[in-house]
Image 1 (cartoon, rainbow, N blue to C red):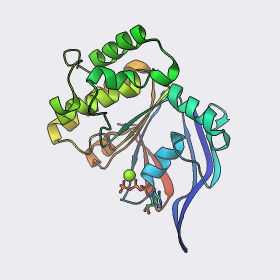
Image 2: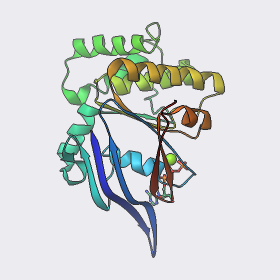
Image 3: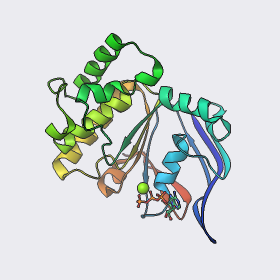
Length: 227
Ligand SMILES: Nc1ncnc2c1ncn2[C@@H]1O[C@H](COP(=O)(O)OP(=O)(O)OP(=O)(O)O)[C@@H](O)[C@H]1O
Ligand SMILES: [Mg+2]
């Protein structure tokens, strides 16, 4: 479970300071799903970076299961990320010279998983996103939707507690967008993940049971029991 208290993030460029997050209090239950929306520059990606331990707040605490990520040493934070948190971004961020299977395996290297088990688990993860027949393909030999599936398999192969997605369908056309959303929702249901997703897609936001809207670094939560 996430507990955020008084999270602020300021970026200082020369004499000007940007208040990307201006005092965020938020809890997210284990296995919960939170959709984040809001205008460009509102602080969505910044919040996701705090949740993922990719960056630290200027003030406040970001607790994951009672551990404040803001206070962890760099080494411990890297370990928390490698073990517990899967990331999916708008740009798929695959390594172009590696096959789908090898790209997925990279997530298991820091965990010290041995080669044969890495292969097996990567193949299994790719199978679960419907790419069991594409293990040996390079990113350049796959469609955008397929590349994003590889990125999702890479995020999930380590069986993280949390999946963070920053506009995962932002680079895809409409049909692929629906396809990827279906994959993500199925995985969320099957794996009992905590799933937090930033989106610009108002149709997705409308369907969300719990929606966080971020404007000028401030969060408003809307619960939608009917969704
Ligand atoms: N590394 C950085 N250095 C300086 N300013 C930054 C940095 N990262 C973000 N900002 C600023 O912080 C604010 C919030 O940015 P953020 O990327 O979180 O917005 P966003 O809601 O994700 O926007 P978008 O919808 O365009 O992705 C913006 O004003 C942005 O310019
Ligand atoms: Mg963003």
